[in-house]
Length: 158
Image 1 (cartoon, rainbow, N blue to C red):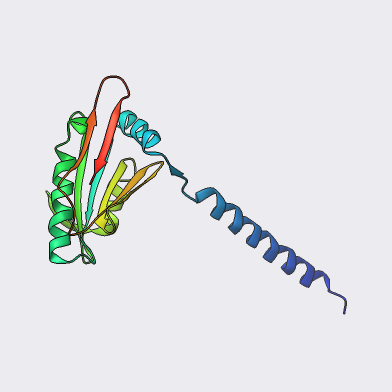
Image 2: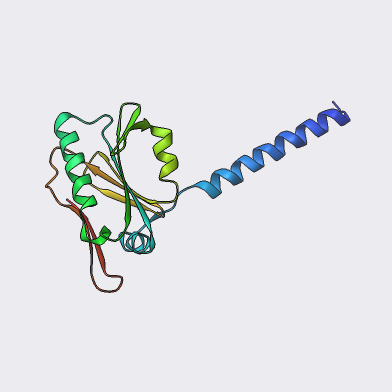
C-alpha cells in the first residue's frame, strides 16, 4: 500500500508533534539535587515560598505540618528573605491576606524557591527550585534553616 502525499504530510506532522512532546518532557523534568546544592539555592534566593500542604493529612499530621511551616518561617537562615507563607486546604489557599485559589498562590510563588511541607514519611527531597519536606505524626519538632558564616547552611527536618 502506497501512501499518498496527504498521508505522508500527516504522518510527518504526527511524528514531529510526538518528538516535540518528548523533548519538552525531558527538558521540564526536575532534577533531584543534594541538600548542599539546595542550600546554595536558598542563599541566593530573594523570595522564599513556604507552603504547608494540609491536604490528606490526619489531624495530628496537620498540626505537625503547621508547626514545621511556622518554624521554617522563623528560621534565622530566612530572616532577610521575602517570605510567602501559604497553606493549601481542600481547594483553597489560605494566606495572611485571606483565602485565594490554589492557582493564584502558585502564580505568586513562581519566582520563589519553595519549601513545601506535606504529609509523609519524614524525609526531605531537594530539587533546583523547591524542597519537599514530608512530615507525619512522629515529627520531632525541628524544621529550621540555619545560616552560618559564608555559604555554610544547614537544613534540618526531623
